[in-house]
Length: 153
Length: 153
Image (cartoon, rainbow over all chains, first blue to last red; front, side, top):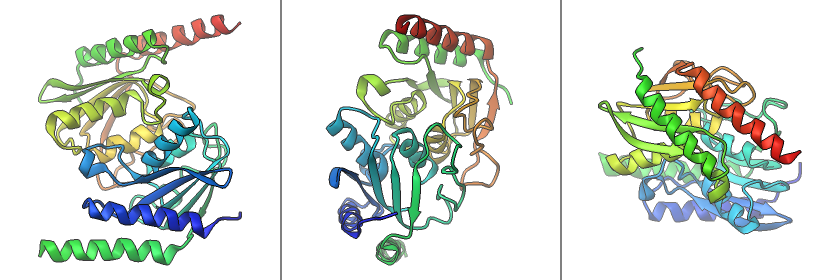
């Protein structure tokens, strides 16, 4: 399964923007025909929105662009393993391939806390590939939470 | 686990409103201290939004009302067993009790297609009770899809 580090770097750039708003640095992009058509970062705190995760924000932007919430033929790159909410949205959007960076041992839905991507589980199978630019994605998150703890002490 | 048919009837009323917009009749309400603070119905087609399910719309309204996307002490009533996306949003919102009507054998995340509510699975446990006003919820959905098939023939 071929992936592009360039697209994960674009997702990482989105993640970095989230820090400026006091949000956890998680970013995502939707790619269609080798072009980014959706960008997203965490907006949960700033918009007080449960659905304000990077993946859903990127999917919404892509849906607007394609004028359809069905995103057949699109791939999603995200810096952290998606949670169940985002995993559900990714599958229902018919995302073709999902590439994620770091693992989320506590809440990840690609095999960590649960696995929602088992073939035949739902009416669409998204193919999952984890560990893309893993170190960069992990370091960015770890640095953020380390700083946060310092501020709280 | 005490539940109120009145609140499920309020969710059913929301579901009926969705039909007028050509959306599948699924409705939800969020209840806090015995009062409805969030209403939601399907808006996925009309708003072209992947997150436009009844549950997430109701959670968003409640979050606005309480000025927090954490909805501790709130219960959610929904006419259909939540999908994985909504189940994830419900758990992450810290919903106390989830009451649903009809089962969704194909995509339900409360034991049908998968079960995301197993105790200890995530950092919050939502207690689930299914089958509230089940027949009314099921009939409403079945009639809608029967009509839809007629129109397509």
